[in-house]
Length: 378
Length: 174
Image 1 (tube, chains in turn brown, green):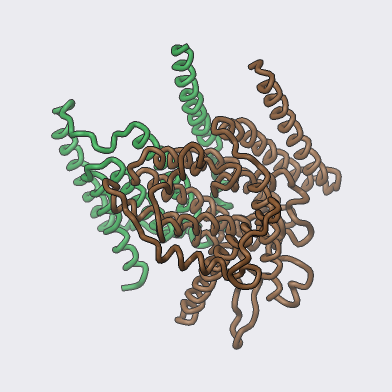
Image 2: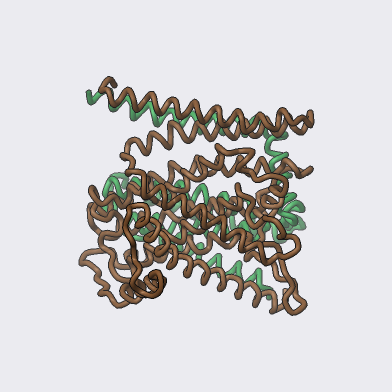
């Protein structure tokens, strides 16, 4: 462990943070433009060509805005809460591999900040820590609306974390398919296990559950209950203004990016793509393209879906997503055992078929439940 | 003095300080936050001992899930600033006595151990964490399967119990 090692780690961490911060700025632009297109508007197009300078203008505006701290707030926590929200969203990306490795001045540079064996667990633990920022922001504001927003978000995040963890477990189990000594929690090994086939093909339902659960984790529409305008003004960040508000904003969009990166890594082959073995610098490009598409889906959902009612959100998380993800994990695990035992393609293809069947059963339940409610016969 | 020792000393200071802060802060929310800090530093201790799996589970389960529920309850009930009450007057002296006994016992044990040949060392498995993880899963699901299942049934019973309690309340309200 010489000083070049530390230098490399520091530089890589710094570059990753810069990527995320720029990504955040341009994701806001991307979202506004895409939303505008879907709603037959133009969107921000004044600052710079195609409005590309809009994020910079926004940043300058937010920096120079008055930062007002209301009276009777819990000052320390009030200042700490935005920081506690942003930091997890940044460090979450540390374990995601951006590519393999390349040579620079005779030194092999790995395209990931941290290669830890329990990478998936790291993601889970940081995701569970990230609730605190929002809860504390709600509590320290000393405002009923903010408080309700914070409490809603903590309930929502805890509920959807279960489905999230179980769908990740499905990906971990699948990574043992090609590997003789079993699955791995290391994200690089999970990516390498997808060389033959992306996990989204083998376990589409697991990927879908992961995606829905992450939408709830990052408080995106249609699960943006913590900041539902009609009911809670702006939810947990009602009392925040200026840069402190910008930090919450930043955290949400960075989490979107990082979650898409993680989803691409777990289910869409991460940095894998044609020609990556020869030109390792293509890895980040492929990952970027996948993240770009996944982010588009998030924006698309926001543009088209109304917000879910709170009790239905909870019922959906506990009564549909959790049992379905348990079934998915069960199907995946038994399928893998049978494939190992009999080496038959039949068992292999039974995994996606059976999981899609169980997902259809779940959808049928939702449909029946909603139909019954709409006729008023409870 | 190597890096691990420095990290250990700094961490121990933070752990002790956060534990004391948890005990002596007036606001229940601050107490809960100090406890979170304490759990996180304990997780880093596990990392130092070469057990990343336990470290991450510690953060996910204790600092993430359980303490969020604690905060949730404190905030919902609005019990941040309860006045100190003297409902159990005999409790304080007894608690102090028991704490002193515990401290004396643990100090005695640590020094007795240190003087004897049985020095506490990190287990062999801890060197390679991936092997460690697999080995741990094997031990857990082969040797200790029954205790593991009993624990999970215990948790399940607790969960069902909580649901039953809230259901009964609803039926009574109707």
